Length: 153
Image (tube, rainbow, N blue to C red; front, side):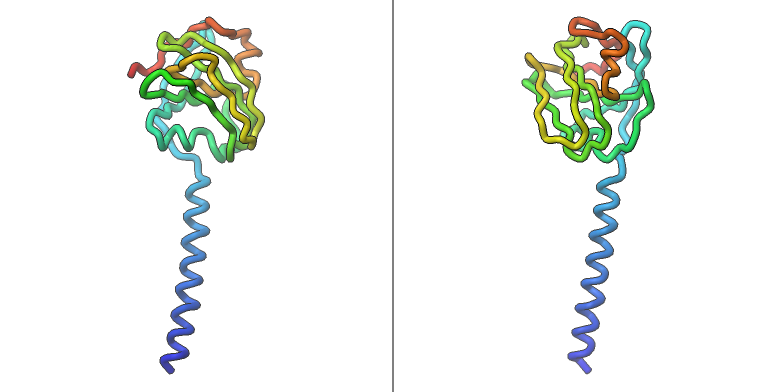
């Protein structure tokens, strides 16, 4: 009888563990909710989620299946840094603009979905703004353009 109970308990534990594992995996793939701010690039308005902690910056836009046209995510760094971005578990292609302390675009990189390619700022950046692929190009926004409304460190 105790042998049956041990076997049953082991099976129940295994089933529970796999169920919890599936649940945790599903939760990990759910987009995290971030604070939202309004930014603008000249006449172009942007609804930007803010990733300002290490955990938020690591999550970024992973597992998103779509993003509205003028929505994006701004990454705020603790200090100016040689920042690089990648697209691990990011399902939609994006453009990233690296920004200096005044919000001026340093450089813009196009990023393919679900790749581990590094896309880096050409000099120390205070912010990175991710938008849908070609968003900056379609609006003729180039290095030197200032993005207003960024959170101050």
